[in-house]
Image (cartoon, rainbow, N blue to C red; front, side, top):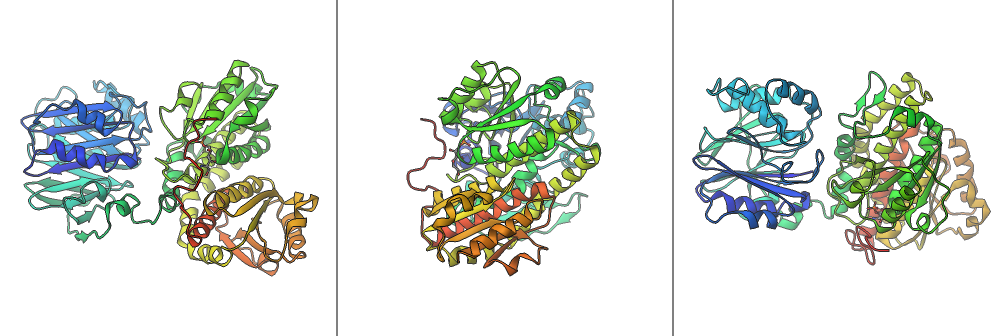
Length: 614
Ligand code: AGP
């Protein structure tokens, strides 16, 4: 998730762009850049934060029209070359989103004589715009006007984009466009702002027009005209924003955690976008530097992680063993690093870490590598320490996660593990193309399934309110739902401060059952699958001790309500994928419980977002 800004007015553009970018830094900040149009395009880019960009700008940059970008890298390392704006001769573009077919487009453009400088998908947009405007890499005269070149380019893009475009030979004109990536226009007094969200220009104007998918807008002479994908003029409404800046950063949500829970439909989509070949029933993970031969002969997988990432790793264990037939161990970084692990070159180590900076995980992976293990990382932060100490990196594309409690980073870690396990299963001949296709078809529906849960969150909020005074909570599940029980307990305890324990449901009778009273809520993850009947038995065990049972169950399950006090529903999906949906329910349960208890949700006591020390 990056941030783009644009300005067309009568004041010097550079300071306005810098100030606007500073307001978007929470969206991503590994590199930044601006481009100002005066008699020509002047571009300034650097790695680091906006203040680093500001420090390299000359005084008094002339030009009252410009674009800017703050980057959260998804393609290509955070460095100056990869930072935006990206140029193609006298065209400059900034972009937020993911172009899924950029490799194919890049190949064609190179064939047409274009020379790429960066590793990004965005540079493809710049060269495509040039190609349409001037007829090819050596074109000198325009073949069409800029908006036509933009429309032709957009029709070739697959994926998501919010872009702002300048052309050196079109003074005073900025063109913006969006598809599946936020873009808003601020209407000032004789000046127009464009940005990924309103926070960047609220101090200038609260009159906002929200750009819709497949719309293009021409901004010039202090006004803006909107067009649909076919070039037909579109009339848009202006909205007055009443939010303050802080509320706007949370897009109107009360907390970053709630905003990030709601971002999961898109972050899950972005994580698998461009990686699933439904027809062949395979997964494309070009960034994985492991040969098929190594995958076939892999004897064991060692997953190393902490906290929520460790819970994700436990889901990975079940997936690698069930789908790919590879024995998998999961260790916390703090235990592995001081243990005496039996690992060697035949063992694949997988580090799972949202931040890429967790000290225990880093130390453990260094240890594993010293034993000769090949190592890959699943992380959310491009350029983080783990990415520089590993053989392959698989990036989750959750965007910055501000809330201390991991939410969208967890579900995108799961998505990555499903893709990896399926890839290994297919290469090892453990999964048929048919079974793989069925799983991938269901996986592509997960964003919509998550949205259905979010649309029905009132039921979860009511349940949270009902039991917010509980002193103890239990979470139980079996097989793939056991790690979700652990994650549900972790979410609840870390933000609501209620003592909560996650257990394998079959373990209750070996001790924990003694703790249950008629005031103990027990969350039972009882989604349809091969352990469903056993879960029903566990639920009856719990009810026989008068405890309260809150079931997480499939929407079409008409049996479960006979045995429990509350049912929280998830849409019916592939049995293997239901843990992803159940985890969203439990995130909301934890959030609304903490809200009811008046806790500090985004910054819970005693906790840090990234534990970079032992
Ligand atoms: C979970 O909500 C916490 N934020 C914490 O357990 C976190 O998952 C853990 O510290 C690991 O962080 P990492 O994924 O950045 O390595």
